Length: 246
Image (cartoon, rainbow, N blue to C red; front, side, top):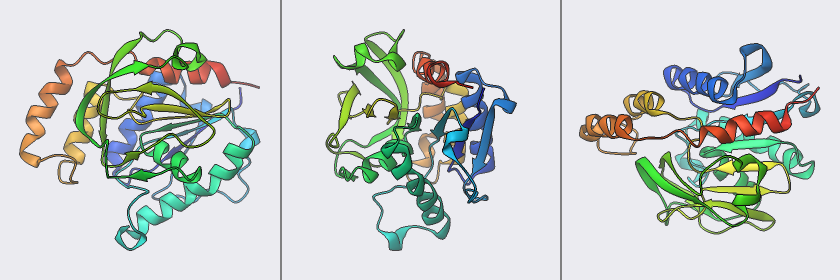
C-alpha cells in the first residue's frame, strides 16, 4: 500500500502527537503506512510527489486562514503557505484529500470561497450534525446515522458553498460541516478524529488561545467525557479503506 501523507499544523507537541495517534487509530493505520510531516518544524520536501501517496490528510490547528497577514505569526504564515501550495495540484488532479477543521478553511480559501469569522463559529464542544441528501449517497459517509454528534471548536467558517462543491453534512449553528470538491477532495469543519480523551488534551493546550474562557476548561472537559461521540471516526476509516492503493 502506498502511504498516506499526514500534514500537521499544530505547533504544540502534545496536541500534535495526540492528533497523529488519533489519525492512526481512527483510520486503522500503522505508523509505517503513513508519512507524517509537522509543518511547524519541517518543510515539505521539494521532491515530494503526491502520486507516491494513497491520499493526503490535513489536521487542525490554532491558525485561521481569514486572519490578515499582519496578524499571523511567522509560524502560522509558514504553515498556511505550505498547505496552500499543495492545493492546486490536489484539486486539479482530484487527489484524495481529507481536511479536518483547518482543512475546510484551506479548501474554501483555495476555491475562492468566503471563509470568515462573521458567522457560524462554534465554541469548543459538540455539534449535532445531519447528513444532507447528497451526504446519504456519499461513500465516505457510509455507515453513519442520518444524525450524529461531533466535536467542534473553530473561530472561522465557510460562509457559503464554494463553486464546484457538494454539501454533505450540516448542523444548525454551522451549515457547512462537510463538503466535497470533485470526486475525492473532502473537508470537514468538525473533527472526525477526535474523541473525549483527545479533546481533553486540546482543551488543556488551547485554554488560553481564545476558543473559550480559561475558567470554563474543567466544565468543557466534563462535557466532552459525558458526550457520546463515535460516528465521525467512521469517515476516516472509510477514507482510508476507499483510497488505500498499491
